[in-house]
Image: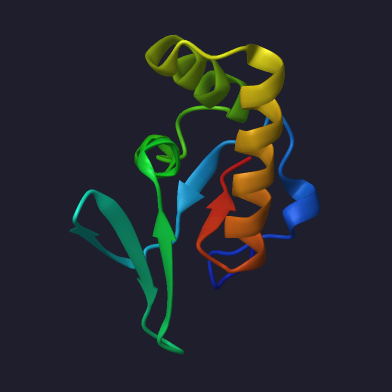
Length: 102
């Protein structure tokens, strides 16, 4: 992670510990979590699963831990969840919405 709190999306691996950027504002609107990056006004919408992944990005859990939690809570197969969570985290990292602590 650099001093802006973002990281290269290629740095998101199962051992990574994703953490939300402190600069991002959030608001729930009609069951959708909206993320706002105030520095440029860009906003992003997350569905229920994406919102849960976002909530779990505290810097204390690895990506593998996030996958396990999502599998249990949504009764979904690990292969699919792994791909979806890794893809989402890489997109969030590309957009400077998450970084990693390790």
